[in-house]
Image (cartoon, rainbow, N blue to C red; front, side, top):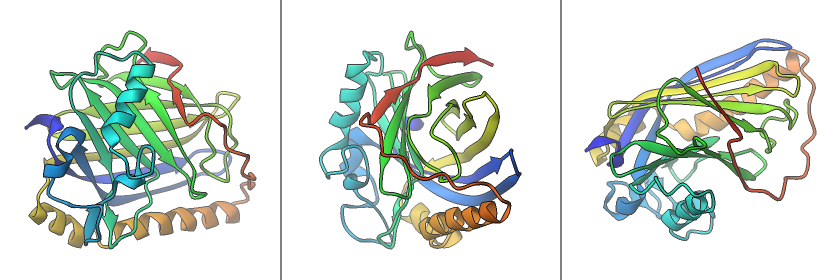
Length: 260
C-alpha cells in the first residue's frame, strides 16, 4: 500500500526549550494519515460525531470544502508540478468531537511515492492558522538528511517572539514517520526543538479503537499539556510575549535549503 494509503501512526511527541531556561516534555500520541483522493473510503467517521472522527472543516480553507483543491492550488502557485501523485494528510483525529492540532502535515507525493513537498499547517491556541510549504528549490524529492529553512511568520507560543526561522527535517518511509522542527531566534540562537516520530500501520476500525484506548482523550491531553507547560515556563521566569496581529499572508514557502 505504501504511504499513499490510509494509516494510523502511533508516535511520541517531544518538545524541548533550550534557553533562557530549559523545559522539556515527551508523551505518546497517535495520528491518522488520510489519502485525499480516497478520503471517502477511509475507515473513520467523517464530518460527523464519533469516538474518533475527521472533519474537513478543521483543515485547509477550514470551511468544509474539499481539501485536495486547496492543497493543489498551493502546489500550482509555487510551480511544484512534480507532486503529481497522492496528497496524504497526517493529523490528529477528533476524539469525542474535540481536536486541537498544533501542526498537521500534508505529504505531497509524485507518482512514485516520493515526497516532493510538505505543507506544514500550524494552528495556535488563539484560533489562527498558517501553512509553511517545505520543498526544494528544484523540487527534487525530500529525503532524510535535508534541512529546509523557513522564516517564522506566525505567532504560536506566547513565550516566543515572531522572528527568526524554523528548520524542518523529515524522515518518512513506508514503515516510519519522522518530523523535526527546530526554532532559531533572530540572532540565530537555537531556542526550541520539537520532534514527532512513529510508525505506520493500516487504518481500520480496529486499529482506531486500539489507539483510542491506548491513548485515552489524547486531544484533550495535548491541549492540557500545552497549558501545563506554559505554567511551568512562567514559573521559570520566561517573559510573556503579547500576541501581534496576524500577518495577512496565510501560506509561505521555504526560503533556504541545506543538506546535513
